[in-house]
Length: 124
Image 1 (cartoon, rainbow, N blue to C red):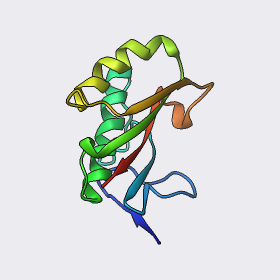
Image 2: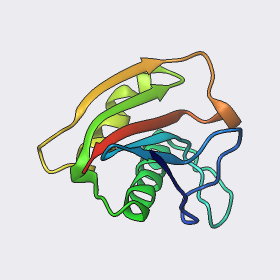
Image 3: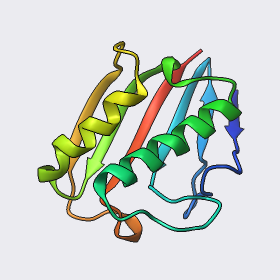
Image 4: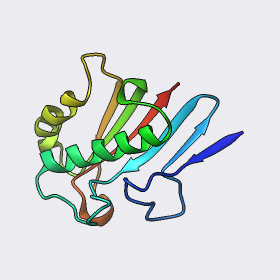
Protein backbone atom coordinates (compact mmCIF):
# COMPACT_ATOMS: atom_id res chain seq x y z
CA UNK A 1 0.00 0.00 0.00
CA UNK A 2 1.29 3.45 -0.82
CA UNK A 3 0.51 6.77 0.80
CA UNK A 4 0.72 10.14 -0.94
CA UNK A 5 2.56 12.80 1.11
CA UNK A 6 1.28 16.34 0.60
CA UNK A 7 2.95 19.42 2.06
CA UNK A 8 1.76 22.99 1.53
CA UNK A 9 5.08 24.49 2.72
CA UNK A 10 6.84 22.99 -0.33
CA UNK A 11 5.91 23.90 -3.90
CA UNK A 12 3.22 21.75 -5.48
CA UNK A 13 4.01 19.37 -8.30
CA UNK A 14 4.33 21.06 -11.68
CA UNK A 15 3.28 17.90 -13.48
CA UNK A 16 1.52 14.57 -13.00
CA UNK A 17 3.45 13.38 -9.94
CA UNK A 18 3.29 13.55 -6.13
CA UNK A 19 5.61 15.54 -3.87
CA UNK A 20 6.40 12.25 -2.13
CA UNK A 21 5.14 8.69 -1.81
CA UNK A 22 5.52 6.44 1.23
CA UNK A 23 5.60 2.69 0.74
CA UNK A 24 6.80 -0.01 3.14
CA UNK A 25 8.45 2.49 5.49
CA UNK A 26 10.32 4.27 2.69
CA UNK A 27 9.56 7.82 1.58
CA UNK A 28 10.44 8.75 -1.99
CA UNK A 29 10.64 12.53 -2.36
CA UNK A 30 10.31 13.82 -5.92
CA UNK A 31 12.92 16.20 -7.26
CA UNK A 32 12.62 19.53 -5.48
CA UNK A 33 13.19 22.67 -7.46
CA UNK A 34 14.41 25.74 -5.56
CA UNK A 35 11.00 27.41 -5.52
CA UNK A 36 9.76 29.20 -2.40
CA UNK A 37 6.17 27.96 -2.04
CA UNK A 38 5.11 31.12 -0.19
CA UNK A 39 6.20 33.49 -2.96
CA UNK A 40 6.56 31.28 -6.04
CA UNK A 41 10.00 32.82 -6.55
CA UNK A 42 13.29 31.11 -7.30
CA UNK A 43 16.58 32.37 -5.89
CA UNK A 44 19.39 33.28 -8.27
CA UNK A 45 22.63 31.92 -6.75
CA UNK A 46 23.44 28.21 -6.72
CA UNK A 47 23.93 28.42 -2.96
CA UNK A 48 20.47 29.89 -2.38
CA UNK A 49 18.89 27.49 -4.85
CA UNK A 50 20.51 24.51 -3.13
CA UNK A 51 19.33 25.79 0.25
CA UNK A 52 15.74 26.20 -0.99
CA UNK A 53 15.66 22.74 -2.60
CA UNK A 54 16.86 21.20 0.68
CA UNK A 55 14.39 23.26 2.73
CA UNK A 56 11.60 21.96 0.50
CA UNK A 57 12.79 18.41 1.19
CA UNK A 58 12.81 19.15 4.94
CA UNK A 59 9.21 20.40 4.75
CA UNK A 60 8.04 17.30 2.90
CA UNK A 61 9.87 14.94 5.26
CA UNK A 62 8.37 16.80 8.22
CA UNK A 63 4.90 16.26 6.74
CA UNK A 64 5.76 12.53 6.67
CA UNK A 65 6.98 12.64 10.30
CA UNK A 66 10.65 12.32 9.32
CA UNK A 67 13.81 14.45 9.39
CA UNK A 68 16.90 14.85 7.22
CA UNK A 69 18.53 12.15 9.37
CA UNK A 70 16.15 9.61 7.82
CA UNK A 71 17.54 10.21 4.32
CA UNK A 72 19.52 7.28 2.95
CA UNK A 73 20.00 8.45 -0.66
CA UNK A 74 19.95 11.73 -2.55
CA UNK A 75 20.31 12.58 -6.20
CA UNK A 76 21.45 16.07 -7.19
CA UNK A 77 20.86 17.38 -10.69
CA UNK A 78 22.91 20.42 -11.74
CA UNK A 79 22.66 22.34 -14.98
CA UNK A 80 26.41 23.04 -14.74
CA UNK A 81 28.99 20.88 -12.91
CA UNK A 82 31.15 23.94 -12.33
CA UNK A 83 28.63 24.75 -9.55
CA UNK A 84 29.36 21.46 -7.77
CA UNK A 85 31.65 22.94 -5.07
CA UNK A 86 29.22 25.76 -4.24
CA UNK A 87 26.32 23.31 -4.05
CA UNK A 88 28.37 21.03 -1.79
CA UNK A 89 29.14 23.85 0.67
CA UNK A 90 25.42 24.29 1.36
CA UNK A 91 24.55 20.58 1.07
CA UNK A 92 26.97 19.58 3.84
CA UNK A 93 25.27 21.93 6.32
CA UNK A 94 22.05 19.89 6.17
CA UNK A 95 23.61 16.70 7.54
CA UNK A 96 25.49 15.95 10.77
CA UNK A 97 28.38 14.06 9.23
CA UNK A 98 26.26 10.97 8.62
CA UNK A 99 25.83 11.73 4.94
CA UNK A 100 23.41 9.75 2.81
CA UNK A 101 24.58 7.96 -0.29
CA UNK A 102 24.49 10.40 -3.20
CA UNK A 103 24.72 10.74 -6.94
CA UNK A 104 25.22 14.06 -8.73
CA UNK A 105 24.70 14.63 -12.42
CA UNK A 106 25.02 17.45 -14.87
CA UNK A 107 21.92 17.71 -17.02
CA UNK A 108 21.29 19.81 -20.07
CA UNK A 109 18.37 21.69 -18.56
CA UNK A 110 16.09 21.70 -15.50
CA UNK A 111 12.43 22.75 -15.28
CA UNK A 112 11.70 26.47 -14.86
CA UNK A 113 15.35 27.31 -15.63
CA UNK A 114 16.57 26.08 -12.23
CA UNK A 115 20.27 25.47 -11.63
CA UNK A 116 19.70 22.58 -9.19
CA UNK A 117 17.08 19.97 -8.34
CA UNK A 118 17.40 17.44 -5.51
CA UNK A 119 15.44 14.25 -4.83
CA UNK A 120 15.82 11.78 -1.99
CA UNK A 121 14.78 8.52 -0.40
CA UNK A 122 14.22 8.35 3.37
CA UNK A 123 13.53 5.36 5.59
CA UNK A 124 11.56 5.19 8.83
